[in-house]
Image (cartoon, rainbow, N blue to C red; front, side, top):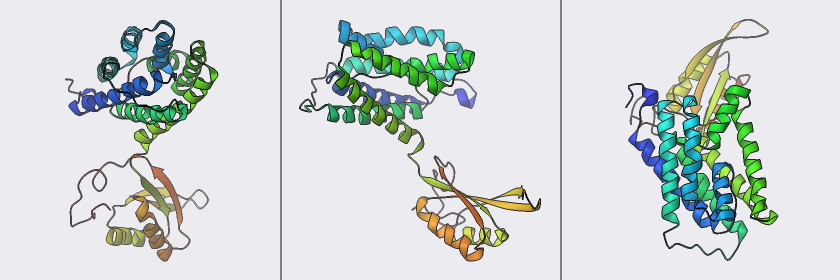
Length: 296
């Protein structure tokens, strides 16, 4: 393993990538393939080959992805290429496994339920896969190449590639199944985004007040939260204006607002969502006594 922290291969990452690939492959086999729902990206291409030529996605996933990974390896770091290769092989392996497990979820030919099941299961698996640094290659690599040489944002390239694949899926399924595939894709993307950025809810607050010292004392004493003091300058007055930065849980936000309002009714507050907060008081165990109180 590399000495660089960024390039370190972690066993937990590989374990979570394995679980994510298992869930995503399960969704493809049990919901998408069983109900003739398409997909975007390389997975969508493998489903087209399955629909037209009955070519097993477990094999086509490898045959399509490996050349792309080898072609785009120069755009990926050491850990990224290892995780991508691992994710590709795991996805292919689980596609092979789930097709041989005698499991059938009878949805009574309800495409709505199939789309929801595929979106929730596949989205959760892919979100877990991405959260721990994994990927199954494919269109991600193509998008990286376009971004580097053409300056086209990755998100834009991925969107258009998905649209092209979905349109091509009309060669083996009808417009009704494509419409439900769009529903599946929406649910899928929402689950991925939730797992990547919405699994931890916190609020960041910036406070500008002439009574900043009193506010700091109250936050640290009453709420037992840490506060950072940032040095700013008023754009109109050009006077020094200390800004307070504090991160609280949503349930503590009202208490913070009351503290600030009681001390300075003219204080300016900016409240915004924090996707993830790492450190003592949030992800690590808090001391029973001291500056921070136990999380609620």
